[in-house]
Length: 476
Ligand SMILES: [Zn+2]
Picture 1 (cartoon, rainbow, N blue to C red):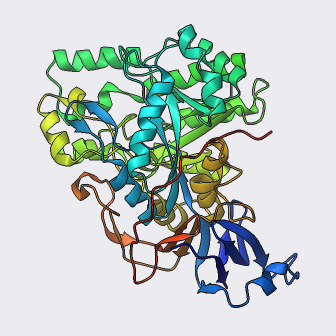
Picture 2 (picture 1 turned 45 degrees about the vertical axis):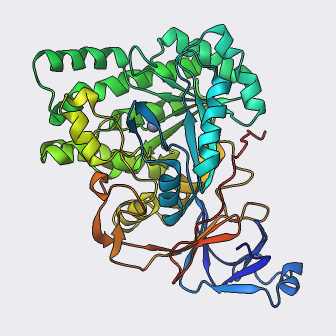
């Protein structure tokens, strides 16, 4: 149940800038004050202190208070072909909340001939019935015909301010560079942001055909059909179009060290106004590697996702990119298929295996363990790439992503000293996950979604009412 007034005492707030000894005050669904206990502004009198005498309290001694995680790239309940669909909205959003992620942004994908608006309505109906965390929808644009582009301003006005284009998936979603430039100009004029899947679909189609021709269709051959150069070339194309059109863009799921270098160089150049091009990487690209494709058929099937997993050196470069801000956000690209489904579809060769892996529930813990405890990320980097930047880039900066007065009371009480945490988290197929075992650090102790406790000590899980559709907009 929602509490009317809640005072979270003696905890440490984590922001994108650092750690802050502060108490947090929540009224209904909103954070009303964050009062420091030391440093500048500490001890300032606040009407909250009087008002909250007798309020419900949580003792957060020894705990970190994080903003609820924001995962701006997920695919819940995504239909692939008849009978094959990724893990559903209810199960996936349960994973998210159990792991401390309270907001996701999914993708509305139009069917052939369907308008963008009809696709958004269809995906909203699916989410509305079953999504337990708050959600927004990016809109996939499969071509750049005038009737498509005419829909963009209305969608932006309705809170779908982000669009997705593909340079991969020839014959289905792939746009030619000229079409991408046309779409980019229209998105810019509509006041939106364009997300781009940067892989060279033409080269991948040729490599796939070659593999089929020579009978190399086992799952271990999957990464060879999408080599690093197919990503880097497409990234170069996108950066050139961003510079030319001045359309705000986000490069999603970058997986290769050279891609990070290209973005870094681009931002140092004259063609790049601040904030024009943002970049994302995914949990599995940073913290898992292509060695899985060579460690047995099941491991290879689990690791089939696009782009594929890369070398350990690429993972190191991606982590450095997250730490220096070249990479803005860390997403899960959660799109889980049971291992049995991948095994079955894999009998017809790797091109038939549905692409994707789970991680929306594991994202905070994995990034904490391998990024903060064992890697080069600070707690502030971690919160910045998992909560704050994804909220800003999705057009949710006014409500989500920071523990700050006026924002939604999406809060995670996190124990940074916990050891032996078990993964995977939540429903779904544990055999399909890349994250399992017990040697994980940190633990999600409590989760509030807009002031409603969904995870509490002793009461692991209280199913909340459905999440809210979040209209998204860019301020300023
Ligand atoms: Zn995706």
